[in-house]
Figure 1 (cartoon, one colour):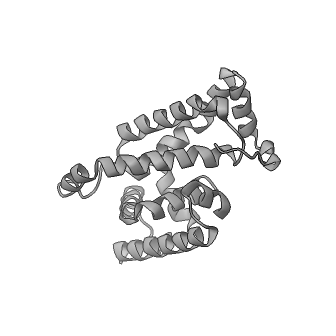
Figure 2: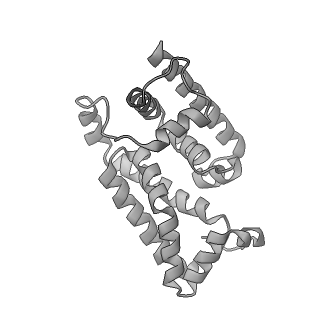
Length: 202
């Protein structure tokens, strides 16, 4: 991270853990891994749509952060830094596997994602619950399909906003965008999800 510590971020308990890790406290770093591992894999799974790749990328995220611990400076919330690294790695992974994925999608339109509780959260928290009550399997399939049709930036913004509860400012920092750009991105994503789900249940 760049120099210029903002003391406001020092109130973040996870920043405190990372500062302890910087001083050689591996137990503190283990606490961070335990706190974020499942959440990170879940978000990466939505982004790359492959469980093994998501787990491998999550491991790489933590490895990069551990290697950078001695030069760590608290210039943002820890979660912002973590998901920024994750977003960059996921983007690189998608670029590297783009051609192969394009070919495989033709034979697997439904995707390989399993049932995930986060999918229901997207619907409930985004006020996108269809008027007709869907059963659990239908709901999961509908939201999975809706999330998959978002572009990668819209999907990441939704995941950070709805699953991680991140502010526009933190999402902007994570994704290298301005706050108005994040607001616009989320508005387009919500509209795309709404239109897709309405079409699905009509």
